[in-house]
Image 1 (spheres, rainbow, N blue to C red):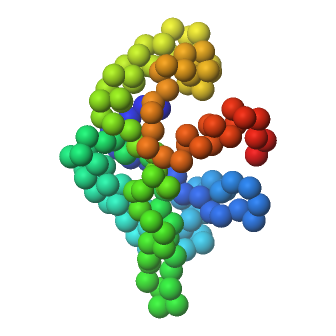
Image 2 (tube, rainbow, N blue to C red):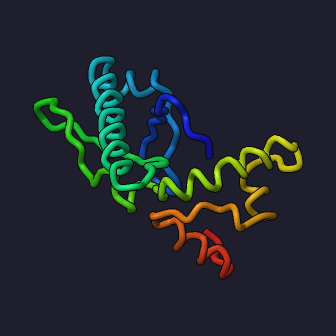
Amino acid sequence: FQKFDTPLFTPTSKAEVGHDENMSMEEVEKLLGKEMASRAKDTALKLYQRGAELMRKRGLMLIDTKYEFGVDEKGVLHVIDEANTPDCSRMCTVEEWESKYPKIAEEMKTGKYANVTELLKAKPELKLKEFSKQYIRDALLEMGFDP
């Protein structure tokens, strides 16, 4: 839930069933080669920086996002899905972040909560109102849906 000075690159691969599978940069390099892996990482970070910049100008904060890449038969890297939309990203207003994050950070410093999830269960008023599909997930979970 904290804002990092430098965005993180956390590659994953599609799983046959269930959630995406985390990959190390070394695994990405083995799969794609060092040059293509580096190009994918650089492209992802540039897309994030540009998205964050555009959203900030509109009073929004890009919390996190994912990009999907593919390589064509000529070895050219392509973004193959949407970028920086509510379907693949989490965002909130800058005002929401600036008003709630300091309170979350202070609560976490007390040591009463093992993680932010526990804190938000105890104090749901601190949950950020996101512009994403997360609110649908939350509603389904509250209704007893078992993914």
